[in-house]
Each structure stands twice: as C-alpha cells, then as structure tokens.
Length: 492
Length: 147
Image (cartoon, rainbow over all chains, first blue to last red; front, top):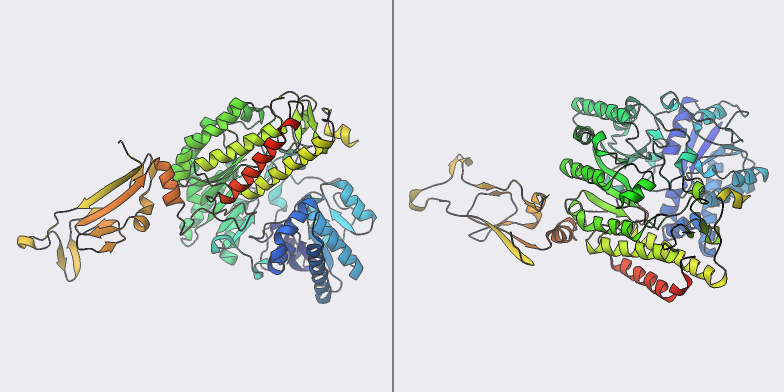
C-alpha cells in the first residue's frame, strides 16, 4: 500500500502541517510507504497572485472564473503527478476545518476523473455530516475518518474497514493521549520550502485537546466533549526529539490553551529546564494560547518557570474591559487579574497578544466604555513591548453549538437571513447591528489613538464593511426578522 | 518632573583627565586598560518602561572631540543626549518600539495578511473606517431598536 497525504487550504503556510506529520509517523510505524503534499504551500508557491482569492474562496465559495481555472488546473496537475509517481496510491486528505471543503471537492473530482484510486478524508472539516455523507453517496470519497485519527487511521492501514469512526460518526474520543499520540515525523515535509517566520524553522505542537473553560461564544466544547492532555514528559519528549532530529527549537502550541492543566505545564517546564542544562545549545522558544486565571491561583514562580523553559509569546482571550461582560462570557477572570498577568509578563519578558470581542449580547455603553478605557490604561504595556498585538475581531458571531447559541430563546435573539453575525437581542434593544459596528469602529479609533499594534485589521474591517452592506441590503427589502426559539428548530 | 512636548535629557561625562597637568584618570599596560574612570549606562526607565535596550541604536555618545560612539560605556568626556516627547508612552511607541527602519513588531504568529507587516501603519485602516462610518450615516434610518 502507498498513501499520499495531502494538506488542503485553508491552512497557514508558515509552518508544515502537524496533521500530515502525525499521519506520516503512523505510516512509518505500520511500514506503509507515503508521500506528503502540502497543497496550501503549493498554492503559495505556484499561484502567489491568486493566494488571497483562493483563501477567500475557501470561506465564501465565491471565486472569479479565471482564478478557478488556475486552481483547477493546479489540482489536476497535482493529482496527475501523484498518480504518475505512485499509480495505486490511496489519496488521504486532511481538512483542518470546513473551509477546506471547496478545494477538497475539486480534488475529489480530479482524482475520480483521472483514476479509480481510493480517497480517504479526515479532520475537523468533516464536522458537517451532511456534506460528508453527500460526497460518500456520490462516490466522490471512499472513506472518511471522524474524530481523532490516531487509532482509526492506524487500523485503516492495517486493513480494517469496519470500525467506529470510519465511514460513520460513532467515534470515540481517546482518553489516554500518551498511549496513542506519536512523535510527528516532519522529515518529508521539511524537504519543502516553507516561508518560515523570522527566518527560523518552527513547528506546531499539540499538548491537549478540548478546553477547561466553556466560554459562552465558543463551540469547542461541542467538538471536544472532554478536555484531555498529554503528560508534560510526553510533550517534552516531542520537542526534544524534533530538536535532536532537525535542530528545531521553536514551537507553536495549537492548543486552545497551554495552561489548561497547570500540573502538565509545570512538568513540561521542569523537563525542558533540566534538558537545557545538559544541552546548552538547546534554546527552546515556544508560543501558544493561554488563559488568565484569578490572580490568587497563580504564583509568580509559575511565570518565571515558563520563561526559563522557553515561553516567549502568549495569545490570550481578554475579550473586553468589562468585568460584567467577561463574567457573562464565563471567562472567570477580572480586568485586575489580567493586569497582574501583564505586569508579570512585563517583568519576566513575555510578549502577548490580546484577543477582543466587541458587542457582546448583553454589552451596555458602560461596558463598552470599560473596554475603551483599557487602551490608555495599558498603553505602557505596548510601550514596554509586552503587548505586541491586539486582535479587535469583527464583532460577535453567535455559533449554533456555543453556550450562547443555546440561549437564543432566553435572549430573544433574531438573525437576519440566518446569518450568525447579523443578530439582535430584544433583551438589549440598544445594541443594534449598527450600534455594534459603531462601537467596533470607536474601539479601532481608540486603539489607533494610543498607538496599539492592531493585527488583521484590514481583513477584519473589510469583513465588518461587508457585514454592514449585507444588513443594509436585507433591511431595505425585507421586514425585521422575529426572535427565534433556537438554531435547531430553524434547522428542522 | 514637569516636561514639555519636546524635551532633552543630557548625560554628560566631564572632567576626566588624559594627562593634563600630568594627571591620568586611566591606566594602560601593554595596550590593555587596567584602570579607568567611566560611566556605564545600566538602565533607564520612563514611567516604568525600561528604554535601555534602545541606547545603542538611538542615542550615541558624542565625545568632546567630535567622535560618535554607539556604546553603553562612556569612557571619554562627552555627552549622550536623549530627546523625547510627551505623552511619553506615545513617544516610546512611535519612536522606539515602532522603529520604521527595523519594524520590530510584526504579525508573527497570527498571519492572515502576510503583506501587512507594519501593525502601526493605520493609513488603510482610516480609509476603510471612514467607508464604514459613511455607510452607517447613510443608512441609520434602517437600524432602530428592533433591527
């Protein structure tokens, strides 16, 4: 058997895809020959002028005919090349999210038109069961893996075809990650020319799945029912292996949070600190998402230890300057707690990136003002290089499977055109769509006034503009929608 | 300390003797300085923000005989002059953190706009913000408390 592992857009092209490296390692263990094709990277390298358009196509499915033609040709050429090198290969495609679906469909058509080879799909991009079943019924795919692939993909390579998680949604989560997670093999991927950031090679790494919080706007609890994590020693072993194998010392954790388990993080730090003493050339640097906790639960020594182990940069969901709103979001920390962490980051040299949401369902003008007040108050953290970016977002979308999505009836929420970003709550009538966008604009101006570095600003502003145009267009031709009882009732 | 919009902070090393009247404040043995009189710049903070890391790049030491030296060791007579503006955080961010020649802060980890490297450049932001504001003004009548 030969497997061709393909990574699909939409995927960041600055680091090799972790999924392919994991699947590659499983192939190694099962003595199955394989190759890797990172199609996101291939677009970046071969169609750079169309990269942004194809990125947008992944989200909206809208694309100019000329761009679609170029993309289709590149897909056809890629498939033909793979078949030429390995005529009987099984095509295994990794879909990071549902945004991978449009290009995946192009691949399925190209493969089936050029061959009768089998196609296997996997990844979070299959969350939409209707889409997956449709492809299967139309014989555009032969197999799909739902949930975590470590067990099912291995059994697939061993020849099993009847099991939970293969061609069905009866998947089981892995409880003991240490027992099933492999050390990813990047050897084949690193042969490709990745445009690494800052001229240093770095890799993704995942220490946990799920989240310990249930933030009201987030649907990760729907995707991962239970928070599970690898042991600190298991994670450290992966970092040390990549260092000893490839000389790579920079890592980016893909976890929803790296401090979901303080015990695991502590163990990871201890091992890395000890290893660095034996290998002075090991200068690990790692980045990831982090949660602020109540100040009294965290010691300064914890921050210090993270720095000694190599933490340089953390992304934190602050969301708002209002404690009331943050409480309503289930964030479980206050602005004062956040300020303590920022002081600690400043003292110990960690830089951080704050994520914000403007226009929470219950947000009042006072809450909004609390957010605006943060910009002058925390400007010193920008000046000190502690805050190196703020993501202001494109206002709140109400996700169906998030806690707030389950409260649409309680909050008398109505959606325009069934769009999760065009909502209005009758319980907070002052916060119209226009007012939400006005507050977002005001937040942007305030951030600029105090010289904050705003990330993804143009991308977000363009999204907001399009949102507004869509709302205007709807309201000019339709009556105001009524509050709904739930997403599920509407879907039914 | 009261400050103006534009300020100048001068650190001066003066009075070091290089053989005047037979007096030497430095001792050299086999081309190695064994004893010296100097000022070492260790750190400097403005309103709790340490700016010491910017010394070498931004504030050279100028000796009285006209040499310019990028150093934290003021071994000659001369001056190191720091001109700063207020509000002081605005000055630190725009003049030091956002060094246009090195663009120190980049979207290093959340890359979507790979072309947007300068996070402090708001020119295009202003254009789009204005477009959004115009749309809001033109269609304000559509948005009331029930929409």
